[in-house]
Length: 265
Image (cartoon, rainbow, N blue to C red; front, side, top):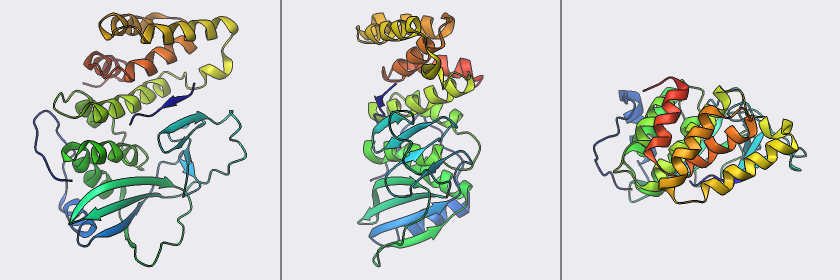
């Protein structure tokens, strides 16, 4: 399935409890914002994750999907010529007036940085704590940008944190949808249906298309039916489609379903 991953000044809000930030993580935040410009924060990535270090990532949750910017495509769709190399995660943070205004994430070989860029090496725990604070407090753009770097870290799965983020009604919709997108991927991986499209029969493909048509109906009608499909259908392809399209709804009920299927609160 092809899809778009829909995807600073601190603004306190209720409803999101970020990871506890140790002193080392607070120190990382200070180091990042100590001067303006681009800062590369490098930390260990998930063992499954790979990339070219500059333009795309893949296999983040052990599947064969590739990510480039907001575009997601399947590794079978003409992308196997790309060499996907395991390596550290690298977050390129743009700092203006002492605030992080943009984040870009890469996995794989670290290119030689330009002379005006700074490089900081961090542990996964430090990086996740810093990024979680940005995801919890930042503007829509920075908060959304922080989610993928959290997911690719070689750290405990961030699903409880993303669940809280997805349920935070006072967070921008784009942030909640990005959290829901990765929660849907976590559920799909947990259920073992990541490769459902590769093994889909003609009937499965018809069912998946029917799920897409269902997702285009008004949310009040589509969300309950998508939840029912995600819970009960025997077609792995249709179930995967329902889980994905629920993530695009921005509906809190999708978060509740993901929590149920992942066994978290």
